Length: 141
Image 1 (cartoon, rainbow, N blue to C red):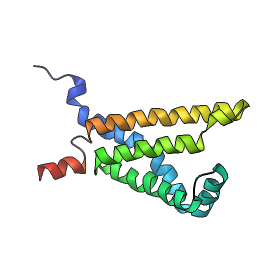
Image 2 (cartoon, rainbow, N blue to C red):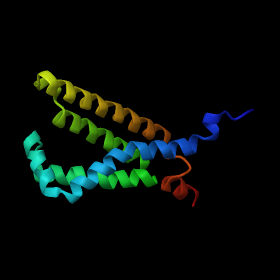
Image 3 (cartoon, rainbow, N blue to C red):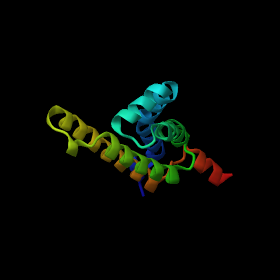
Image 4 (cartoon, helix red, strand yellow):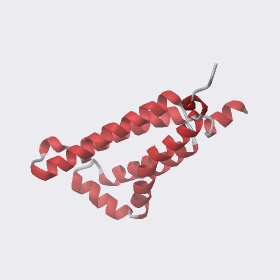
């Protein structure tokens, strides 16, 4: 049997996909971490519950879970965690159904971007991290 290109390069593609999926979370998680008070104020403004705690959760998930997914640690459980987090942020931060005009349109785009991101992480849950992940190294050792 001949190995198709997709099978031959699947581990590399999984690594690239992980990088692309977490890039957004790492960038904005770092911004939240280094601008904690501004993030907390934003959380209060958008109506996030307990803004201080919401800020801590956002930093933990976006930055630290992002790093873990990047290097391939606990891929499957963390992929599900980030799916749930992303859904929560869609509901809290992009509630287009309460808006009108251009605000509604922009929030709707961001809401459905979150839904699409969730799809990517669900695929990561199914595939796992691939050869270039700490999870795979630990399984071999």
